[in-house]
Length: 377
Image (cartoon, rainbow, N blue to C red):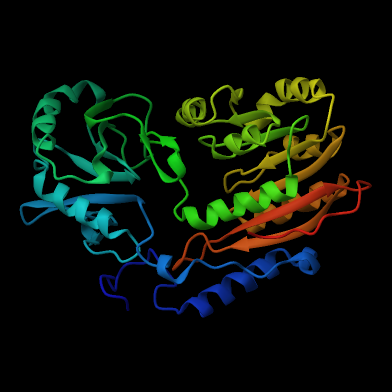
C-alpha cells in the first residue's frame, strides 16, 4: 500500500498494482468492449512513471468537522474517511487543503459540505441558502486574506448550495471570497470554478496531437468541434487556419472558450438541440475538407447526432475521444452502419491507479482517399 493511502479508501482500485498489471487490465478491457475493431486497436499508452502518483490537481472531497478542525476525504459522516496525504493528489493540493482545514471556521458558522479544487480555483460548497451567504462572507474574506501562498488559492469561491449532496453545483449562490474568478491553468488555458479539466494533461495533450495529425486541418478546411469544453481544441483548429465551430452545453465552458479561442463561434446547448444551426454552418463551408472532433461525456453522442454524422455531406474524417469504451462501441457501430470506417483506436491511461482510461477513435468516410497511417506523438 503506497504511503498516505487509507486502507478503507476505495477511490483508486489499482493503487496496489504495479503499472504493468494496471495497464494490462485496461488494455484487456478495451479489447473486450471494442472487440469488433480488434484489428485496428493500438497498444495502450501509459502515463510517464513520474506522473503515476501525485498527478491530480482537480479534486472533489467531502468535508467533516472533527477534533476542532475540518478534514477532507470521502464518504458521509458515519463512514467518513479522511485523506490528508492522498498520494494520487498533488502534494501541493494536500498541503493547501491541510491549511484550509485549520483556517476555516466551524460548522456553526460555516456548514461546509464539500471542497472542490480545480487547478488554481478552490470552491467551498456550504449547505446554505444563497440568501444566507452574506452572514459568513465577511468573516471568510478576512480569514482567507491571511491564506498561505498556493497556486490552488488563486481564486476562492463560496458556493451557498442548500441542496449540496444531491448535486454538486447550482446556478445561484456564488460569492468570490479571494483572488480572481478566472485563472490560467495547464497550457495557459483560462478556467473558472466549474468547468471540467483533465486530470493528466500530459496524455491529454498527446491525444489531441494525435487527433490533430489525423484530421490535419488547414486553411480552407472546416472543423466542427462537438462538446468542445473550455476551448483547447478550438484553439488548435483555429491556429491551424481552419474555419471552426464549437458546441458546448456548460455555460462556464462557453465563457472560457471566448477567452481561450477568441473569435471562434460557439453554440451553447446539447449537440442534438443545435443540429439546425450546425447544419446551416456545415453547408456554408464550401471549400476544403469538412471534419469533426468529438469529446462527449460518458453517455456518448446523442443518437440524433450520430445519425447526422452518418448523413453529413462531404464529411471527410472524425476524431472521437471517449471516456467510456461501452458507449464508444455503441456509437462506432452506428457510425460504421452509416458509412464511416474505423481506421484506428488508441487507448490512453488518463487515470493512473483507477480502472478508467480513454480511447481516441479515428474514422473516415468510406470511399475517401487512401488512409494515412495514424501515428501517436
